Length: 242
Length: 246
Ligand SMILES: Nc1ncnc2c1ncn2[C@@H]1O[C@H](COP(=O)(O)OP(=O)(O)OP(=O)(O)O)[C@@H](O)[C@H]1O
Ligand SMILES: [Mg+2]
Image (tube, rainbow over the protein chains, first blue to last red):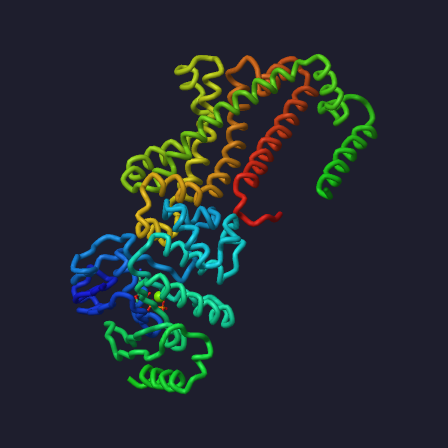
């Protein structure tokens, strides 16, 4: 379990009354769950991700993984960024080998993400969807407990996005990873998650918690079901009217 | 190709101008004069030795500059503390033209090749350092974060991430550096050497062989051009991950 305990943060550290982006923020991610944070642009989602990852030090509060307080970044929780975070000068295989020495695991991760036939390609030669799959493969190769995704599908067109949603869901459920997804796409969050938290700023608060009742495996046709449509419109209302 | 056609056309035009000017009392040699001086030198071998000497000096000085400037710049880009220590020295030494170092070079290394290596080194070091350093400090934060999360060791981070990210900047530095190195060398040879293309020009000036002087200049231009071209080829060859083009 990953737990945020009274996290407080602001970017203007020196002023007498810093306007806090996060104030005593609490969050629990359960083992094996797929949790999504949905919130408006600029509310502080990426900041939160950076704090969880250990890139930013919170002013107050703590991050606890399985009863231990964590401070620095580590292989236990890997971030997949919105912008490309692949090493452009390394081939697909080299991008994997720099994070893991386990050749068997690397091969398995590449197979899982359908990249086995492209190990000698440079990221520039991959499509947008393939690049995201490589980011995921690389994250899996570190064998983390948690994978944190910060709007990973933002830059992809709808068709590719939909296919990737199905694939990613299959992979993370198969490998039993705990996922935190940050997005502002309601439909994406509904399709992928076990649980969704609606956020609003400043400071960030959890406006609403939604438990998603759908079973796995899920496929795109789920989006046409009555229950899905009902949940989607109730979420949209929650976002638009306080 | 087109640009070269225009170039040759211009040379031929200059030659024609020389042909139509009456009398032989012009001080400057015509393109044909320079060409025949070149053929003569080739047969006799005189200038070839000077070319070899100059190339040897520029190569050694340049390689020394590259293998010291690149690692130092990358390390400075990695460590704020190191760069705070090194940068003041660099910033103060950089504005001094390499030829201003010639008296010091001769004091330190005498009149031999070592002085030339030193001058070439100074000419090449600063552009290489500056560009490589700029590359290293412009590494996006996201790569640093990825390295931290995946617990990539410092050595791997510097050699596999920071260095390769900076490589295009390093090549820019090398290409500027080789030009500076070549210019500094010729200047050094004009003043304090017993061989080399700079010396060849100086000698022929005293002998009043202006055709050879111009030949020396042309050779300096052509060789400088070739040196930069060689680096451009090396650059394309060593970064296959960059898109091809141009
Ligand atoms: N490095 C920074 N320095 C100062 N302010 C920052 C910095 N990064 C972000 N902010 C501010 O903090 C707020 C939250 O930014 P953050 O990037 O966390 O938002 P977000 O929810 O991820 O937005 P988006 O959905 O657009 O990615 C914004 O108002 C932003 O202007
Ligand atoms: Mg963001």
